[in-house]
Image 1 (cartoon, rainbow, N blue to C red):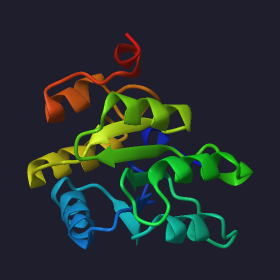
Image 2 (cartoon, rainbow, N blue to C red; image 1 turned 135 degrees about the vertical axis):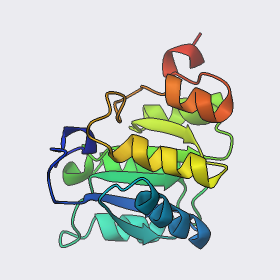
Image 3 (spheres, rainbow, N blue to C red; image 1 turned 90 degrees about the vertical axis):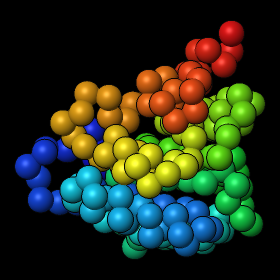
Length: 169
C-alpha cells in the first residue's frame, strides 16, 4: 500500500481516500476542495462505523491510501474502528486521520494509542477544507502526512499546538 506522501507527483493514479463521515455536506465539500487544489483524488464515502468496517474487511474492497475518520461516527465510533483496524493484518498500515470539531487531549491520546496517524480539527471553512486536502495529498509538500506530526497544520486551524508530545506534558 502506498501512502500519499510517497507518490510520484507525475503519477496519473489518483490518491484514494476513504471518508467515514455521516454528514453528506462534508462529502461534497471534500470533493470540491480536491478540485479547487487541483489534486488528483478519488473519494469513497461511508456514513457509519459499521459500514466502514464492512467495507474495509471485505477482501474485494480496495484498500485506500488514506482514511479520513470522523471521531463521532455513528454506530461504531472512531476508537472502536481504530481498534478493529489493528486486528486485521491487511489494514494495520492504513494511515488514518481522525477529524473532530474540537479534539480533546484525551481523545487525541486515545486515537494515537489505537493507531491513528493524525488527529485534526475538522475544517471550519471551505478554505480550510482545501488546505486539508492539499496537505494530505500533495506529494511535493515536505509536511505531508507523517505519524504524530500535528503541530504546524493543526495550530493553523485551532490556534494551538496539539502535538502528541505536548499532550503528555
